Amino acid sequence: MAWYPGATKMELQPESDAQPAIKPTQFILHSIVAPWTPRRTYEYWRDSTNLESHFGLGYDGSLGQFIGTETRADANGVANRRADGTGAVSLESASNLQASDPWTAEQVEAIVQLGVWLHQHHGIPLRICRSSTDPGYGYHRLHTAWNPDAHSCPGDKRVEQFHKVVFPAIVARATGKTNDLEEDPMAGYSKAEIGDAVLYRDNIAAPEFAPDVKKNPKWSLSSYVRSIYNAVITIRDELRALRKAVDALAKKES
Image 1 (cartoon, rainbow, N blue to C red):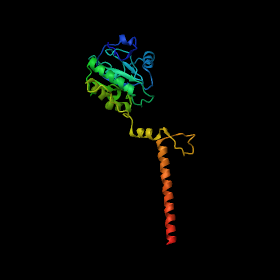
Image 2: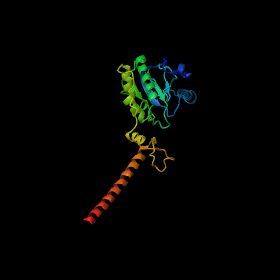
Image 3: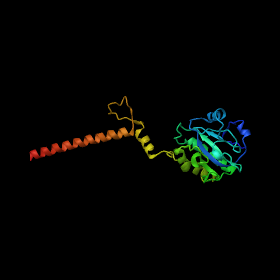
Image 4: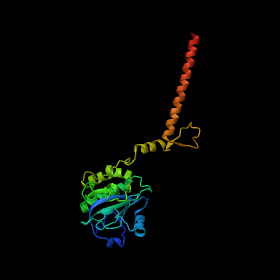
């Protein structure tokens, strides 16, 4: 069995010794649908279920390994171990309770480092799995054979990150094209979510003239925009009234 030097060893027994050997040909990413540390994930595999993954990843990038990568772990359907002895290495990552959040920057970096090691140590080819048996990299819902219960795991945002950030970084790092993770911090977020974050976050000092500045010292950008708009409309109406008064006075004098 093989143990990744970048992970904390938390060996599951009796699974680690009792389950059959595999030749690792795939790396499959999951979300565990809970904000768990690697230790909590280990305890869940140990105490609550007969399933398990090879790795558990926390929000902070901490990584635990529960079973050696050359031993079967039961998280990937038929990809756990095939008749020819090949199988998938699995990673469960902390997420919110809906599995709707993106991986953190720390999680992405940990996944990339592990993905590079799996390529270098086990020869997993640098491609996305084209079928459920094709060697390479993927995520749980990529192929039905891996995900017979049709889970959305690892969630839409993480799937987008996998294609735009994670897998390209694994390839770049493994081939020596870059040593740094070039992550788009907005990857996985929709335009609407980015817009809402900009418009509605209360992080701008309220204007001194605001009547409730003491009770409401921070404004959102949207509040400022509305205030400016209302001020412009007021000035426009006053200018129109002033123009009418000036025109009327000019007619009277003529």
